[in-house]
Length: 489
Image 1 (cartoon, rainbow, N blue to C red):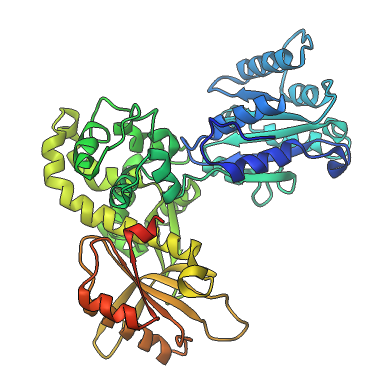
Image 2 (image 1 turned 135 degrees about the horizontal axis):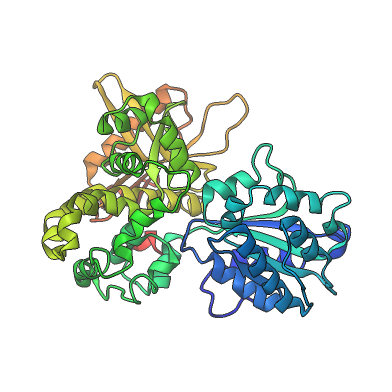
């Protein structure tokens, strides 16, 4: 099934759905198949499923926040329209509805998508168990060609569908997570060719497709000079949906019951307090009191826990959605002024905070993605793990923070091979001092029995490099300079 031209990117996701929709009967022993599609809101899941239903001649049903009785009636009406079969009285419960779905007259594999599934399972908690029973031995799905997809944006709910002792664990033959666009694809989607502008825009809206048209009325910055006016007329403008979007992303998660606490946790991370202890100190709580909100935010895919690659057992937290970082760092503290349309004044006094507190750390995450994607071409060896880490320097009584650490695959009982150590700077010209710092880190790791003979020292510069550093890089093949042009090439 060919992907419609109106869908930008998403080739891998489309191919996965197409393969699932066309699963031959012999692959399921003549029975139904179950797929799970999830992803944060605004990523285009519904758009993708609707297009697949149209292409495959399938059925798409979008659940709403409604009572069980109304949801059953709406589902039965949608099914009746699609199959052409008359349904007398609406199903009394989901036992009847799911059984009828699988027993309908299907003459070939039928793609059926139920979107916003968490709305249904909230009012009908037994629904996953009912689907599991009908897919099991003796169920109506054992002789049905239905290819059923359950989709939802509530990540904590969708993640639990297949976890642990959940009824549907082991039943799904498709588990598809629709992620935001990768940063280079996001730049193409926004029509941005200037890599510096692309980084700035991505630091605000990330790779969420809906923010390109629906939330900004198609308004994209035309040049680097237009970036500041663009921020004022979109993200900081109370008349655009983008203005309140970060708040809604948190409010939409049912597992979050104390928004004030969770916003404080996110504000702490956005301010650079990324450890458990640092977050606790920032919000005035004990470390054990914030374990639960951190776990909830992680389950909701709003933050990610990333290990310190040099200090096992220690982790740092990162906000996954750039718009939330932008809101917590820039908007939340000046909300009252923004609501009365003082965006120009607010932006004038917070722009430097944006560059240091938002763009700088964001560029570091982009460089880690770049190192993982292009590792073999960059370093001569493909890294198996890329992250960050801190190295203790006892002689100088300090610590060296490494922004980009690339490890090769772990060999059994052997020391780790350090493929690359990287330094990232957004607004500072990188020079020989930064290179000396990386060399010192490499020597310290060698003393700790890491393999560093072939370690590439990579310097990622948003503001360029000194002539002295460029001269060194031309004669030393273990020194690599990466500017924004290469980052986006």
